[in-house]
Length: 313
Image (cartoon, rainbow, N blue to C red; front, side):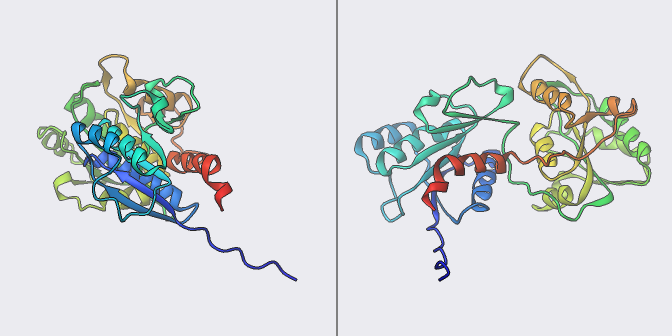
C-alpha cells in the first residue's frame, strides 16, 4: 500500500524585533522571506524595549503584549537597539536568537550572528559570515537586455565625493552602451548640484527620475528588469541588492578616504569577479551577471534550516 501523504509541517513561528530603520528591516525581511521559501512561516513583530524596560523584563520574565502569541522558534533582529529586547524575549518565551550584523554584545550571548565578511568576524560556531548585508531583493526572471540602471548615492564618510567624477563616468557608460536604455535615480544624499551638470551632457539614451519621484516599487521593478546596473561606490547596500536581482553590476568609482569596511567589501567583490569598475570595463573586462546567482539571504536560510529545522519536519 502507498504511504499516506505526509502532513504539512506546522508553521515556523518567528518573532521579529524592529528598531524602525528601513535598512535593518530589509535585512530581516530578506531572511524571513528566504526561510518562508523553505518551510511555512508565521511572523509576529513584537515591541522594541528601551534599555531599562528590557533589563527589567530579563528579571521579570514577562515580555509586554506577547502573552497571546505562539511560542517563537526564532527571534530575529537587526541593529544594536534590538539586542536586549531579543535576549529578554528569549528569556521569557524561549526560541533561538538570530542577529543580523555584528552585535555590540558578545556573539556567544546569541544563538547565531550573521556578520558581513568586511567586518572581519572571527571564526565561531555562533557566526555565519556573509558577503554584505542581507536584503529582500528577488532575482529577476524577465530581464530586458537593453535596460540598464544607474544608481547614484552621495557624500559619505568612506569616499571623497566628486560631482564631476561621477557625471563623467555616467556619460562614458551611456556612450559605451549606446543601445541600452538607461534609467537613473538619485538618493537623499545626492548633491543638488549633480543633475544640472549631468543635464549639460544631453545624453539621448538616459532618463533621469529623481528619488523624490520614484514610487515605493521603483527600485525592485527596475533592478528586477534591468540586465545591467552601475552604482556609485558609496552605495554599498544598493550594490548587493543589484547583485541579488541578477544584474551585471558595475561600480562608478570614487576615491576612498581610508581602508574601511566599504573598501574591503568592494575589493573582495572585485577580486572574485563579481563586480567590475568602469576602468576595468574600459580595459576590456566583460560585465556579467553573478554566476552562480548571488543570494546571501537564501544561502543563510538554507544553513539555518539544515542546522535547526529540517529534523522538525
